[in-house]
Image (spheres, helix red, strand yellow):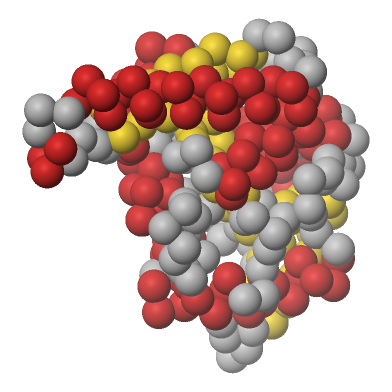
Length: 265
């Protein structure tokens, strides 16, 4: 059984992410829905009143998720504090295996990632699954794994392996080769065979000078439903997190992104 931590700001994008999580992980796993908020110093003296309103709103929100999914075992928690730091504590306490959240909050940012999601991705010790609001709620059938073919511990891909098995999905191991490069990529196929045991997988390559453009091309060409990337893949993930590229990405990529945490040897 996996422990799924759903981070929510009580917005519609966050509810969409929660329903996506339920679709792919199903009723056999355990769920914790967490809402965090920061106290407004302008409301000094009204904290009790505000906290009561927030908790009431959260209960209504959680009940809506339960009614929609038919789940009867969702744990709920409200905490005061910054999202990333609170999540770190809750992940450790609840032994969470993955954090699920919307890629943007209710603030309406035009960037691919909102600031809270960026902070969580950068600090999380477990995989983070970020769901765009326009991503279709369905079980993925083709997961594109963005790789730089660097040294990788097989256990790093455990969450990809789990999702692929539970969804009967194929994993596409994608690599973007620079246009001017003449050297073929060095593939550790033994590691991938070990990490993806029992999961159909193939190797996909494209030539492009821009990592995001290259991965977008593979995703579209192969009909990918989800993209997975290892956090240490600084080139690809760095571009995703950078504001200068983020808005353009949001306009063309509406796939869930699974960020995996590198496991040391």
